Image (cartoon, rainbow, N blue to C red; front, side, top):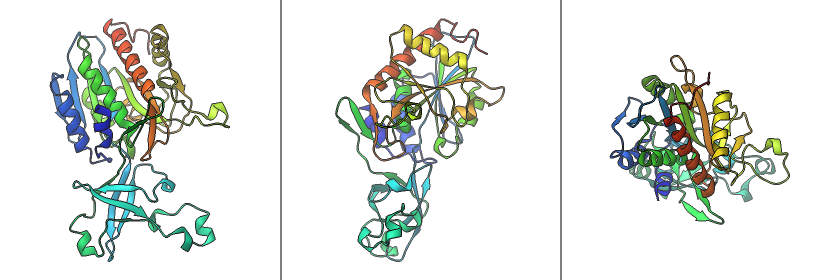
Length: 344
């Protein structure tokens, strides 16, 4: 399955090559132009019926992860984070280091040896290490090097009522959706852009948007979901199984009101469940795209994911399928040439 292949690949920010190669292999026979820019963004063009307004659809390839910064005399690996990771999730997690995917486990001082004040707070990253099963720095250097990227070792699993557990659903779910659109849409011209380094400050999106110079952009994402009991509803950004989430505002963008209302109208007219992302926290590539050159009109459509930025994110296959339905309906409207009429 495509999503399994994408999520199990390693693609920490700045080292997306493995993911990019999978995507190129999937889409190369379905696009009319394909290039990789200097930063590593993958930019493709799908030729179909022409439209007076240029459409770009994007998804970022990278995931949060870690990087080797030191190896001590006993062969333990010291690391730093790449992207936003809650340090409380790190202890005891299995990881894969470098291109050779050397297995390791994140360890810390046993709780039995911790003082009370240590047990009452999250352990600092400086106090964590990765054990790769060697007993000296010399042995460790045979397998890993300073600067190696580290990804979580987490397998794609389907469970429960149409749920999926995997790492990197943010944002391999967006990549998977964009790949499916590229393969299945035949009569609409649009640019598909798979960006790099979103998780460390939206670094790839600006140059990619500068290259394409779109009039309108739809950003595809996996977004935070916190649908747990005993919490005020206004604090729940999205819910599983309630359909694709249309963003209102986040840390980097106030999304175009007319465009998002148009997307909601398309969902309603096609009987597709949808929801609004009710949080201003976080951000995505729209933050750079909508202000590049003369600017572009942007919207973000996301698949809700529990436990985001962790090795065990959870999403609903129903939400994925309904997001794909909505995107196809949007492209069908765009094909008519009236999709962004009246949008300023």
